[in-house]
Amino acid sequence: MEALMQLQIITPDRLMCDESVKMVEMRTAEGEIGVLPGHIPVTVMMAPGVTHITKADGSIRHIAIHDGFVEIQPDKISIKAEIAEEVKQIVESGGKRPHLAAILVGHDGGSETYVRNKVLACEACGFKSTLLRFEDTISEEELLAEVDKLNKDEDVDGFIVQLPLPRHISEQKVIEAIDFRKDVDGFHPINVGRMAIGLPCYISATPKGILELLRRYHVETSGKKCVILGRSNIVGKPMAQLMMQKQYGDATVTVCHSRSRDLKKECREADIIIAAIGQPDFVTADMVKEGATVIDVGTTRVPDATKKNGFRLNGDVKFDEVAPKCAYITPVPGGVGPMTICMLMKNTLSAGKKEFYR
Image (cartoon, rainbow, N blue to C red; front, side):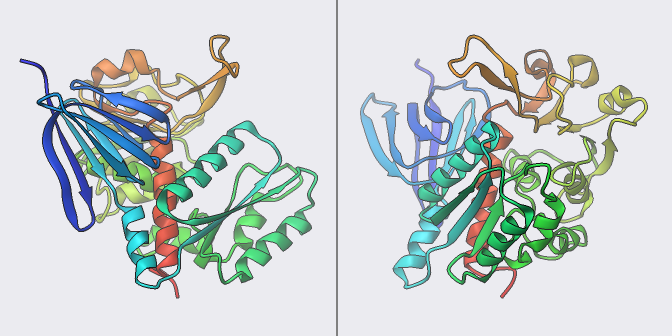
């Protein structure tokens, strides 16, 4: 008997599809993919397009989907068309279309790719988007003036300043200049402080995306040992805060960094490892216990002559040797990255709805 998998397509107000299928072909933020039974677990973000469903009887159904999360398991696919459907309802009822702006300074390859994906995600979600580009010769004073313009623009609900910035510009000064009510990246000290004590706020997109992954895959976190590799302000520190809070992780958290002793021992005892250290292939099989969940946040560009652009994205985890020991593991690319963009979109929707601040 030919293998089948269960497909669910869920919108905010109804279950659009729930049936056994042979194959699903869809357009995602990572490109076109085809999914058959037995596919490795992964979560990706949909892009606007037509999803082709090969049903159990061999017939093909076509469904237009604008956006959503796709959760792929070996025996099940769940497509949750969430944000675009809600935006559509807001606009149809006479509400304002959410507007996300982004400032990009210079021509860093990674930043270019990330911002381009954010703009595509805005289109998929039905948002209005504005991209402001500046050369890396822009002065700090000029950049702060541009931030101030966006702060005062009533049509802009939220905006980001893509990091890293050129060395002559203080990233912290720029972050603090952003109106915290429009800080959809969740980097402003007011949002960071509110997050730390459990008050409603914009939560940094990558930690928020990791929490969403753990929740959607029903990974038990309460009382578990979670080791976080890295102590950056963007991932490590907020991740530690969230994982120890009752309403999120409720875990026992250890943060390891460049000065930590017995780092391998800490990792071997962990039920959950979140690697955000920025060193390719740092986490190896001898650092991971059987049945652990490993979240790889690393995205380092390494040379690869087999690739058209001459490089590939490499995670902090040596995937091929670590994966067989894991209950769950995120790939690079295609794991945390798409979820980060998804959470930025959710923060933008919250900004448009004035969910946290008036």
